[in-house]
Length: 150
Image (cartoon, rainbow, N blue to C red; front, side, top):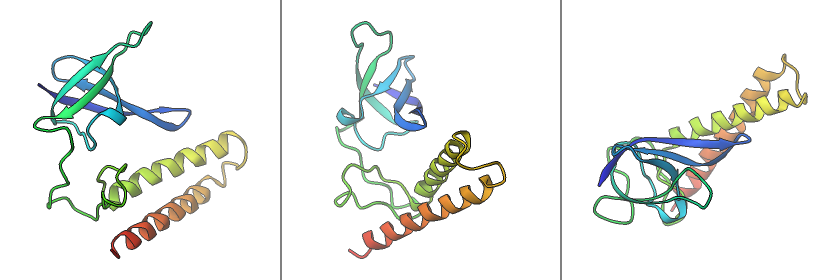
């Protein structure tokens, strides 16, 4: 048994591509999400198995929280609405605020991409970013209002 000391989302070409995990016992590798518990976070006490792919120097980690192979539901003290796992089983439990922060980051990545590909100029960046963020936030609010209806 060990503890997750760092859980870092990885990106490839601006898109999420998985997680790099550092463990208290000194091990590190890339999370095999489909076989691991959902909702893992830094500080969790976990069991893991590691596999080194042929010809590679990194490890693939399958991680399970201590005491079970499925993650616990979010605590009652967590602020904000959370996604109903029964309706969205592949989603981890995230608050509306967490989703909006992630959406803002994605909107910024999209804006930077539009600028670097010369689809917008430097004078348009702020407005483009603001509009993209508002669109995403409105979509998140709509999803949660539908989810909370039952």
